[in-house]
Each structure stands twice: as C-alpha cells, then as structure tokens.
Image (cartoon, rainbow, N blue to C red; front, top):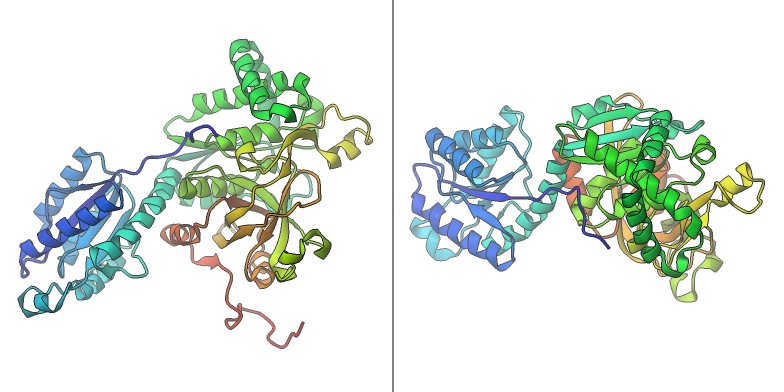
Length: 496
C-alpha cells in the first residue's frame, strides 16, 4: 500500500499550569514525570518552557507553542491550577486542546504536597463553559502519568481528525442520482464545522477527464502502476489507460483547486450518464485514490466523503464507503460462526470502490447491475472498472457524520468485525458482525433517518470518533446500547 498523503501531522505541546497559592515546583515535578511517561510510550510532544500561573505566563506559553510549531495542546493541571489563564490559553490556541490533571501519588504527598487538581479541574470546566469553548476531557481525566499517557495517545488521534477537518475542502461533482434523496447534502452544517465545499457539475468532471488526455507520460506511469497492482486480476488491460487518465485528471484538479485549504476529498457522480460519456465505471480509481489518502465517495455523498476522511485520520489507514446492504442467509456462515445473532450481521457492499490493500482477494470486473440496465447483459464495455472481491476480515468501525434535512448535524459510531467468510456475491463485499446491530439499525440508522452509506475504518476507533463528534458540538450521537438500556421510542412490549 502506498503511503497515505493528504493527512496532517500532529505536533503536540504540553503545558503545565499551577495556581499561585500552590508550589510551582509540584507542577514542574509532575510534568517531568508525565513527559517521561510519554517518552516511554513513544508519544512525541514538546514540553512548553513556561508553567502558567498568570495571564502573562499564558501569553509567553502561547509564544513558545507557536515557536515550536505545535498544532495540538495538552493542558496539565499539576495542582489546582488557575482557571482564568488556563482557559484563556485554550481559547487563544489555534488547535484542538485536551485538559487533564494530576492524581496524588501516595500517602506522603498528602501531608504537605497535595495538589488538589481533582478540585481544580471542576473550576476549569466551569470556566470553559463560560467561554463557550470545547476541549477534550477524557473519561478518567485525573490520573498518574502512565494513566494519563493512555488518554493523551488517544488525543493525538482525535487532534489529527480535528486538524484535518479544519483544513478540509470537499470537491463535489454532479447532483445526486435520481431517487437518491438519502444522499441529500445540505451544506450549511459543513460550513458550520469549518469545512469548505466546492460544487461542480458532471460536465465539469468530463472536462477534467478530457483535459488530462494531454498528460501522456503521467497516464502511462499510472497505468503501469495499475497493471502491477492488479497482477493476475488485470482482467481488462485495454481499459487501464482510460482509468489512468481519469485518475490523473482528479489528482490534477485537486492540486489546482485546494486554494487556501490543505486537504481535500471528492464526492463524485458515478451513474447513470457517467458510463456512457466516460466509457467505464470509476470504482477502481476511487479506491486507488482512497488508498493514497484521498477518499472519493460514490453518488455525490458529500457527508460520506467527510466521514471516510475522519476515519482515515483516526486509523491512519485507507477507509472505504459501503452500503449497509442486505441480510446474511444462515447458509453463508460456516458452522462455527452460526452462534452469531443473525440480527447483528449485515452484508456491507459496494460496486467495487474498496482499495486493493483492504481486500482479501480482488480482480477488475464490471458492474453487474449497470451492465444489466445499460448493456442488456451483453459482454461488458462501458460498465467495466470495478474492483471485485472479498473485503478483508478483522476489526472495523462503522461511522457516519450527517447533515440532516433540517440542516442540523448528527452522527453514529459502532465497532465490530468483518468476518472471515465468503460473502458469495458480486462487487466488493464483506459480512459484518456488529454487536447489538439489530436494535442499533432500527433505532439509530432507521430512527435517525441516516442514509444507506456507512464509512468503514479498518480498526476499532469508536472512542476516538465519539470524542470527535462531541468536540464538533454534535449532541445527536447514536451508538449501540446494551440490551438493558432502551433506545428512545423503543417498544418495550415487543417480543421476538
């Protein structure tokens, strides 16, 4: 797999704070221990040279963080801490921030060196509320260095997602396909989140493709890459130059149009006119770009593209976008897997847009449904270009950030696995096992009016994605609930 591009690098700064009625040496000593613990966990971080006791220290700390290129901040209460300067630092800092506090180490410190940071964190939180500022406060925000290091490691992933979103531009081509109201994409919530959107027509996309034809050396190089990547799965070698031309066009368009933004994703029209005008389906190219750090969502699913990108930043690996597609017949499962609750299983499917690095096996093929509709089931010509096969098994997170029809923002996140099972179907597909999915599907996906596309990350990053949604100010967050906790509106009288 090629190295991911289009991905921010987190440069973490750690700042200790100390209330002036507590010894500053206590914060200094505890901060030294915290930095040593981060070093043991190989978490790179800059220790700010200023411990904050007052507003002048806060300004000096900001200068120090800027000078060292820090784009994410950890504020560490070594003792009670000064809530005013502490929260001013968070307000003025230009990136995401985390707040945590020191636990008392042992009985000896209670005699004279007690820090009372557990108490100080309450005041800090209250002051953040006054300033209407959000910061990441972990589930166990008061701890010893080894405990806090675990939370700081999670924050690095959270910060990467937040930094990426603040620098993101979505390139959209074409209106949603007919009868795809589910891909409705009101852009107001995107602008509320600080994401830039550049909407273009499908005719513009055709122009990008035609203009790229002049870049013959680049096209030849990409086609050679494709041939090597596909290997024995290179079913249609004659098609590679056209696919390569499309890829070169998209990459060039992004480079020319990022403008003031640092990162980009695509949400592109891919049917029904596309095949007739371009002469192929774009699925394989979409997957290749995702494999290199530039998600390309199908069917102009703008929120799907953003969701994929968020998962990419959380996992540091390529994501994919799949339909929550169909139920799984029992006979598909091997005997050892039949103990899984059938309601917790679903088939994740799409035409063939998952990159080869995320597939158990794959080969270039044609889109069966489009071939039936557009070519009367005859030998495929314009419907070629999918990457078909079984999606690799292992841990996954399904996730979606969504702008609702009334221009609000909602999201969901769930963890599970793709099973080591042949899905026995066409396209790119895998059998998903998400604990509690049956009720989650009914009361979050259906009840919350989420569309059929879900972004898939190939790791368990539910903790990170949940915190990102909170930091974005999203209150409507759906997660699978245990059997003992009913969903709002769930009919408790129903019996299976």
